[in-house]
Amino acid sequence: AQSVTQLDSQVPVFEEAPVELRCNYSSSVSVYLFWYVQYPNQGLQLLLKYLSGSTLVKGINGFEAEFNKSQTSFHLRKPSVHISDTAEYFCAVSVPLNYGGATNKLIFGTGTLLAVQP
Amino acid sequence: DAGITQSPRHKVTETGTPVTLRCHQTENHRYMYWYRQDPGHGLRLIHYSYGVKDTDKGEVSDGYSVSRSKTEDFLLTLESATSSQTSVYFCAISPGTSGNLEQYFGPGTRLTVT
Image (cartoon, rainbow over all chains, first blue to last red; front, side, top):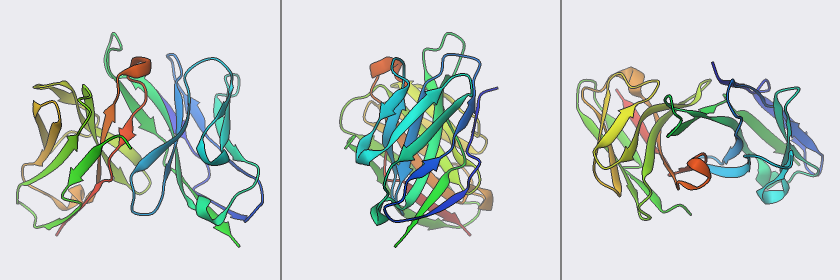
């Protein structure tokens, strides 16, 4: 069965420090991976995606992620965080909803709260 | 901006009452989804639609029904609300590009069942 694991429920970090949010996935089909960000009381915003091609993916707000097939990971990184990056981050994998794969759904991890401190 | 609105944004209701949440999109996307978000669970799929009158169940569909009579509207109904359905509900659309792999989310509806 497909699944996504975000081991860290909360990551505290000081402003301007680098950060890495970890995501591991389990999928028996082609892998399509996503990171979403959720600011307080808002919906989820797509941060970046890996569909194919280069394993290093760049997203919005200076974030990037690296797809590592051998380690089944898709960790999110930012070299220098800002207070405004404080939010919850969700990793997700897209999988077919039914045989034939005409429709997909997202399976989400439980989220990591990035808490940036001054 | 994916052009998705949800209404109401907040609702408090009593156990046993019916509740309908509305998702409206402005860009005629074929695929629409309803998820619920609960602490420790991330988001879980309730129902989805792949066209007008074409809907199917997700992983947590018990107690919920949906309808899609127009491309732009996807309704989620709790026939008889229970306290376990207290949650934040998100609607999502898939633009159909990249094999409808990516999804874009609405602002959410916070539902409290007392």
